[in-house]
Image (cartoon, rainbow, N blue to C red; front, side, top):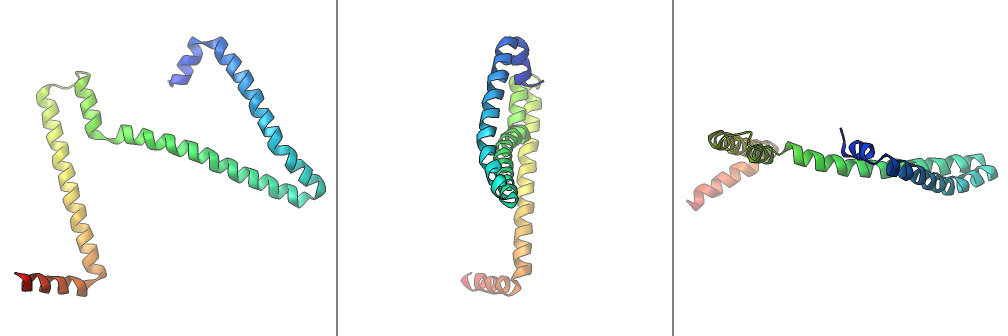
Length: 144
């Protein structure tokens, strides 16, 4: 259950007042946005559709910005395995030896992934510029 739903159950009267006044303010704002579009539609239907399209575009953009920032913070917090491991250790779910063992495994896995990605990048660079890798090898042997 989310924090909002538990808060609304604890404070139903305040939640009702917030919803009523917030909804009224939202409808007033929507009216202010739609009145110019209706005026344009009265002058020319094509202008009204264009105004409605612009309003829908900016509305979608605003909503996507709010939802993207929330999902990024959620994924950062939940997908970091070291942080999750530390939290489990702090709650007492893991013993000292289990925490150290799992932390070592995470560090080894991270190091292996970094080595693999570095090798892949080197291989891709060699595939895209084979002459340069031969030249750099020749330069390296001359320097030694």
